[in-house]
Amino acid sequence: MRQVWLRLRNEEAGQSMAEYGLLTALIAVACIVSVRALGGAITTKFTKLAAEIVK
Image 1 (tube, rainbow, N blue to C red):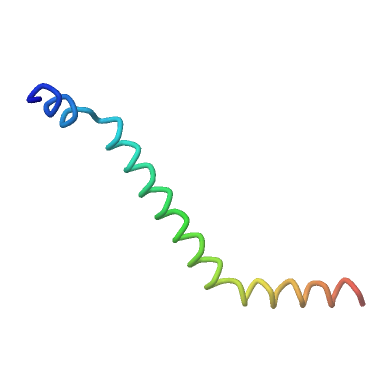
Image 2 (cartoon, rainbow, N blue to C red):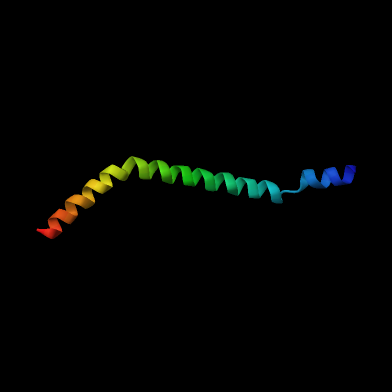
């Protein structure tokens, strides 16, 4: 039992997978926040651009 515990404690595969998951979640949150923050400004710019193209 002790050897199983030591092997599990020293195994790093699960740790790195959890780190990748946390990093992915952090990137997703950053993307969502930036899209929500810039969404209105981008929509306005595209609307103005479309109006200029139609003229």
